Image (cartoon, rainbow, N blue to C red):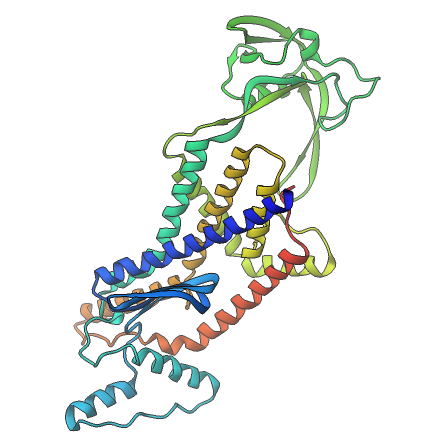
Length: 443
């Protein structure tokens, strides 16, 4: 049963990833069609086509490898010089010959191939239904549509998680009592340890703590802060038991607690201790809690992505040396699938597993949102950067009363795009190998 649950978790993550990709590409497709751009294909996945159907001028389909997707828009870039010459010759004499490939080596050939592929989507020099002819702001909307769909999907998932299900919170209701005062907050009891203050004071499981030392408390963290910060002497606890309030007096003992700082150093301090364990319940958050969680996750993912090469390098070192990986480091889709399988196979209530899966899928969509905003081709952020650069050039020309500049030919950036793609493939391979042979585990 555990193996079956693991497989179900992996399959659910694959389906969730496919839905996320479909929404991402829909975010590009809808505004592109709205602005009149001719879209030839809308595909989910890469590799061999499993299913497709043409509706109007667009072919919709699913491919075998669900690791991405794309839409094929006409005229992503302006026509190449050869295409312009051919169009001019055709309009003048009715015939033209196709130019050969550009010389200059590997990268020049790549540029020429990119231009040739782009030219095939054009229907003549006067074709208005092409992407590069859109105003700058419309091109930015089309390219940001994909990442924004991932962000909105993450907000929906986080809202279901934190508002519909709730956030696991340590409440002020007592679940159990410690039998003794251990040497440290993480130690086990021994026969030589004294009785815990909470048990000695008459606190019982099921009691709900209303106030500590005259201060009302709404959650267990507030009660713990007061108790641990007590400087000695008895504390007054007001608890609700069987619908009635009772006032109890407890005298905290002193024990040691360890704290790990951001730089990895560990400090030890003495804290007050009474020996109460809280009841953990799902507490529903306000309706804006999902949006707040998504925004906070964006900051966390951005903090990882800006140092992604270093993080991947460290992951590779951990893979080779066999050291334990950073649990907050980057993952591949293989790692996300494994974590989803672990969540599904966990020995916990179904609601906990559902919440874990929703959290993973929401975090994956936040990662897609942030990653695609990186201003490098072939990512969406790279296309946005190209459009904005053209907009800046147009504003500059207008300010100084110069002729409007030609559209930016992004095919010239194909060599840089190639380097980025190779780097992404390399980092992805390292993460996939690490997720197979040195995976991060939730448990």
